[in-house]
Length: 331
Image (cartoon, rainbow, N blue to C red):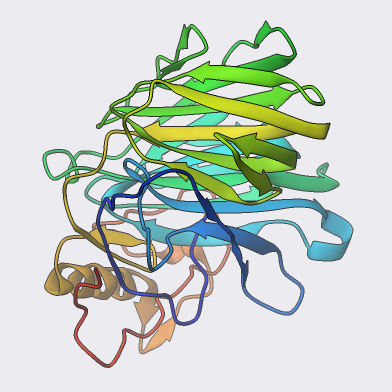
């Protein structure tokens, strides 16, 4: 998914420390136009920009496609990150400039590695009536951020216990391990809790964690989070105590080792310096512009760092204007 804010924040993101549980509330972000999806964004925030290497989290739906128009995100670029798509309801068609064409379906993860540069599009299918899911980004560490683009699809098996069931799509949790490759230690899982159930969730104590509430409410180590809240927990404890509300709950459990590098994140780019992000933007604009205007059909995109999304004919998304001031760190 593209960050379609007209004035996206420029952020230098660092793994920050916290004591105890922090409840992070979302802000609503419309994805372009008057008739468009609105997402609830909990990462990044000015006071906390990463949970492990997780650096971006949009939660959306359930939205009736007849009212919202569904998802129609035209080709747009990425660098220095992996996108993780997870649906609860609906279906999305993915195309990218590395030649990957796949469907995103509930309970199945699609992970796209942008690396040195990639472009892609995401469009909800004609048969989708309701759209509901999460779009997440993972920052790549310095040693891997210029890697070749890639794509993986995985349908994790359901596991279950006393009053809960879950699917592990990244890393290891609940006695399951995902085969999907990541470039830093990570975990990602969906967990469905029965009403009032208590689950002592065993986790890696070296990880910091975020618990995103999709439905219902859940108490996380004594702090209550409602739908679309993200409960943050610092490293140090090998167990997270989850207590579902009286309607039950569905959550995403995300985590990873604290990210020990600073990153400059602006629009759809993750880089390290002002100059690098400016150059990424210029390269994308050069690929999609002819005679001073953005081309109308993505099949006419010039080849370059971000490639061409085969089979897509939507108008590519131009980059917003850069801030007037130099991009600089915000700690």
